[in-house]
Length: 244
Ligand code: NAD
Image 1 (spheres, helix red, strand yellow):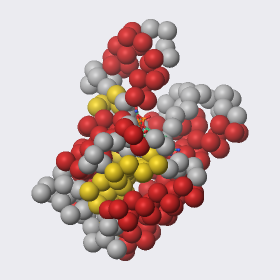
Image 2 (cartoon, rainbow, N blue to C red):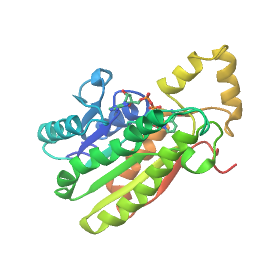
Image 3 (cartoon, rainbow, N blue to C red):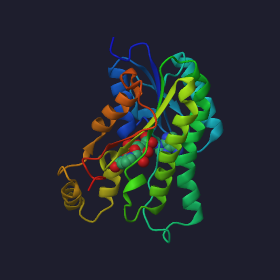
């Protein structure tokens, strides 16, 4: 019994970081939640884990079908799986470009395509995409990543227009720098991880990184019936970073 009781949700990349926090919060609010991930072992009950690689259409189709069957439908889809890339246009070769676009952009397309027949059967269908402030902020050393997320932002708007008349809302969140295992890996690779973390905190207008739970709260809001009139928007959860 929570505000999402009786609803079902599928979260990609839901075994870690923002996805795991989102899947957990959806479950806490009463939804029945499935997680689709390369390695779903990070998602504990009541979350239901399904293995899939969003860059592999066959595995996405199979996992979405299995999740929809286990849940008895899909009301909420959170397209969150994504990977990073660092560098200017000179630093990443074609193979790296195609790999990141395959996961961050086409991964979202594949999962949405597989989930749409189920979303159409819902009376309160919602899709939330995890985009990034990189889509709009013009960050240095993030050419490929920014392009992939810029495409996610445009696609969110296009999908919102395509599906609003069939009762499916589509929005995205634009997180700033979020304290997840992803950022942990970046810091771990630095010469002075503690110093680098302090510098990263100092660069945030709020003086600290955004938490995965704060991004999850925004995603769950956009996914919930409380946001029934909200579609085609990007909600920044960035501690003021994009505005500065
Ligand atoms: P994370 O690495 O902690 O979690 C990502 C999850 O996605 C992992 O469980 C991983 O196994 C899964 N995944 C990766 N590739 C996959 C694939 N091909 N198929 C299926 N699952 C796959 O990362 P996070 O920080 O929680 O990031 C989640 C999303 O948030 C990403 O889309 C990322 O671009 C976005 N984001 C993160 C930040 C940040 O600062 N951490 C900021 C803005 C946006």
